[in-house]
Amino acid sequence: PAAFKATLSRFAPQFEGYRQHDAQELAVFLLDGLHEDLNRQRAAKPYVEDVELDRKGGECATVADMEEASAEAWGKHLLRDRSVIIDTFQGQLKSVLRCSVCGATRTKFDPFMYLSLPMPRVGAGEVLTLERCLREFMREERLDGDNL
Image 1 (tube, rainbow, N blue to C red):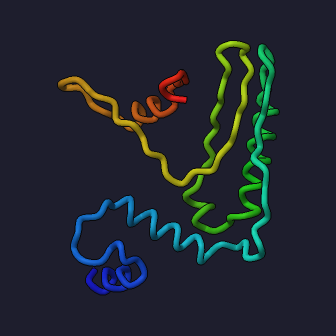
Image 2 (image 1 turned 180 degrees about the vertical axis):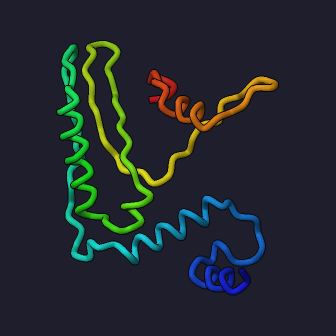
């Protein structure tokens, strides 16, 4: 461990000394560094537009529409970033923004490698599960003046 720590400190001064660090900080640093070194997209990374699926009020996107938009967004992501790290650790997050006035929706698909899950309060004797944290993460959120 001492040799690893010394080598890590040479490349990442934020890990010098013996201050306490978050394990996630180290995982992020290592995975990002490995991805950059192993990225198979060596040529200049092309500019890509975000893929958004827009629907006017009352219109519903079909499953086929969602799958197509998701695949297109992932394909564009892979034009810039492609490594065994992406293949193993990355996923895609779907977010839907719905207008509370007219019902129009905008759906986006974004890559992620890390999810920061909320940890809801639990009562005495209650067990906090990963499933509950994921449900809380995916809970619909109403945007208003305080959280736009």
